[in-house]
Length: 226
Image 1 (cartoon, helix red, strand yellow):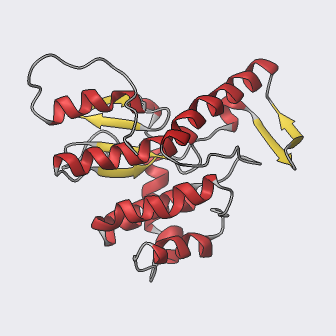
Image 2 (spheres, helix red, strand yellow; image 1 turned 90 degrees about the vertical axis):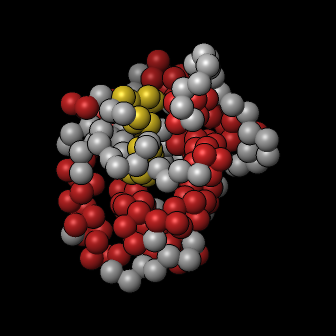
Image 3 (cartoon, rainbow, N blue to C red; image 1 turned 45 degrees about the vertical axis):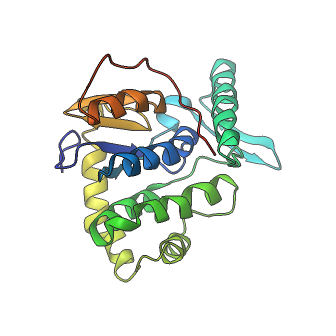
């Protein structure tokens, strides 16, 4: 699997632990449905401590922090504030996480659904993203992720073997190629080998995927109807 190549018209990269991925899921699913296309949904598991440092909270208070300057803390607080505004417009709850999660199992499950029951991608994303951001899921527990699969109507038979075997290999292989391919964050979209990061590119993606008729739209967030 090459990070920039797919038989699908669009590759969508997500990470369950990203607030910006949360607010991109519904608009991207809506675009897929609107155009009657099947996107290639893939995981991009962020290594947050490598560029933002790490921290752990308990009862809302920071109890451990490493590599985070006050400038980084301000940027993180703003990013949550920004994402929360768009979450609220979708009726979603976005609570700041208490630690930096290893989201790889929940992300590998995206690969599992794509291979075993592609039509259930919307169901799985809706089963894992909103509850995680309500602090209802331990996505580091494989049994919890299996429950998300089951609640979305997807068989989890063989999932544990997939997570420790081929699924992990695909996940890690992709991860090792991301930076060389210009993939650094989520949501990221790849169209004809071009990387576009951020939900604000959805109007442009609609234009491209619809045949590029007329002038290209401005880059902007679209407010959901819901």
